Image (cartoon, rainbow, N blue to C red):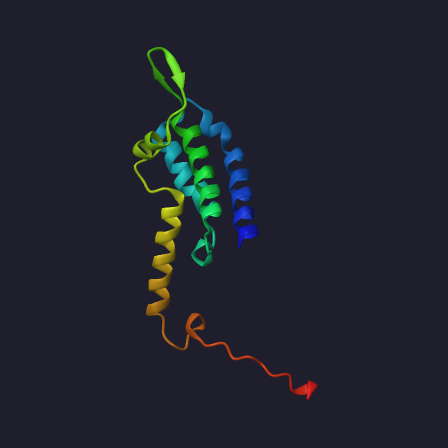
Length: 137
């Protein structure tokens, strides 16, 4: 699972750097940048996350990537003519949405509800039958 999550983070990082010019632009509004994150970067990061078993280390890596993108979008803050990076709580307050790990947990719950509603004869609910190799007997 660690390798799959790291691979998704790397692919999302490539997506992020591909959009870096748009995310740095002062011509693009913050709302548009947040929409770019929600529509283009976050789905790449969370692809097939419904099946992940996320450890604390993986949660840390996922949140780190999410904060990196939000810091780029929300930019530095000026206080008393001094520029500084935004604190984590400021990022989440301004973003006004859940962090990436909470988003993945919600997606997992939605998937579990979907699987519960599926008919018994469909693939997600079928019991696996182990094949016996008759030709070896």
